[in-house]
Amino acid sequence: MDQTTSGVDPVPRRAHGSGREDRIMLRPEQNRFLTGTAAGTPMGEMFRRYWIPALLAEELPENDCPPVRVQLLSERLIAFRDTLGRLGLLDEYCAHRGVSLWFGRNEECGLRCPYHGWKYDVTGQCVELPSEPEETGFRAKIRLRSYPLVERGGVLWTYMGPPQHQPGLPEYEFAQVPAENRYVSKRLQYCNWLQALEGGIDSSHVSWLHRDALRSDPLMTGSRGNQYNMRDLMPVFEIAEHPAGLFIGVRRDAELGTHYWRITPWCMPAFTMIPPRGTHAVHGHFWIPIDDENCWAWSFDYHPIRALTDIEVAAMREGKGIHTRTIPGTYIPLANRNNDYLIDRAAQKAGETYSGVAGIAMQDASLQESMGPIIDRAKEHLTTTDNGIIMARRRLMRAARELAEQGVAPPGTDPATHRVRSAAVVLPAGQVFQEAAREALTARPGVAPASV
Ligand code: FES
Ligand SMILES: [Fe+2]
Image 1: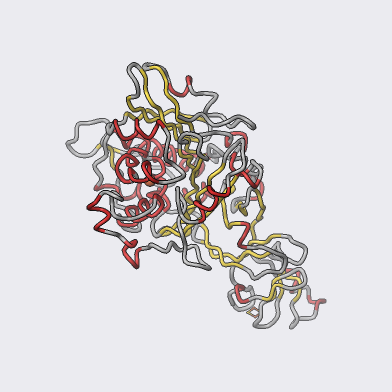
Image 2: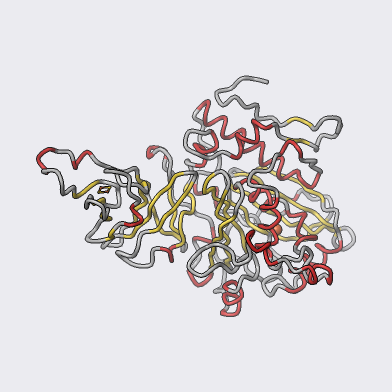
């Protein structure tokens, strides 16, 4: 193995005795490399080069509202909106003696620790320290770690990396369209971010796990593509690179001489977009590490050229499509590991749901959490339908290593590279999908998504 600063060879090896190019597993140290995102780890430092979703805007609804605990990339933080509407994201703990500022008083342009009254502004600067005379200069030296927090598209985004490398704000299309064209939700998922991302890249499971949704979910039914999905259960994966990540093209047989392509863009490190169905809204996810064993599954729906209807929004609020219902006052799903995801064996037997778990989101989460908090990827047996996952792992490892060793900026930090779209198209057999669908894969304001 070649020795690197990170000590990890980025090229996964073939499984013993498989003899097949595609059956590639990860050694334990590679698995640790990919799944660890605390500060100082190669993947953690790479994640810190991107703007990532931190909170829904609804979590800080008004000036001087209660502060909110936020854990991201294994860092415990506090978010608040001050008297003037400025947003702050600070180290959770008071610099004096470590009280959680979640108990703080959000008042007069700052968050005041209730223990001895030290007060901090949105930059983390201590602005009042009642027990010391100002002349000592002690107060001015007290500053909590802080990160920028910026609202865009109903999401509060943060950047946790070196200030000199802070990129422009994200330009994912869902965050650029008018508010009435969009719906965003988030839910807690009890597993490492990578196995959640891998679910977003692996669209071969849709014809199995989510087959009931193709028939009955009001946000998915009625598209011609659903029939292709159900008819051809041996999809062929083709992967193409784009500047921010990959296009994962999945081809199924359509009418004679044509193929139905579902194309999923993945933008590094954690953004995926699901190919559309008919005239429905387009959707996708962010998979954001809370710590190494938990992540936020962010889910968005948007339509580039129209407002979402009241019926659509009501369905999303009820947990249809890729959203889920949560315990009121939290972002914990109602169906969760503590109640066996409310699995309904009778519905499973009758085929009303394939796994017995209701709803796409919890169908995915239940199975991904069942792998354990961090799946042992040395034990996998991958097939050709896992090619997207294999390529994504390689790209992540390569980028994290190049950043760690050579300081090379990872792909997808330039906001111009965010302007991608998923697409569902029928193409004549033999065409190169990323060329034939080039326009369809580009976010174009005012242009409808390519969808069948
Ligand atoms: S612990 Fe916060 S002011 Fe003392
Ligand atoms: Fe899924």
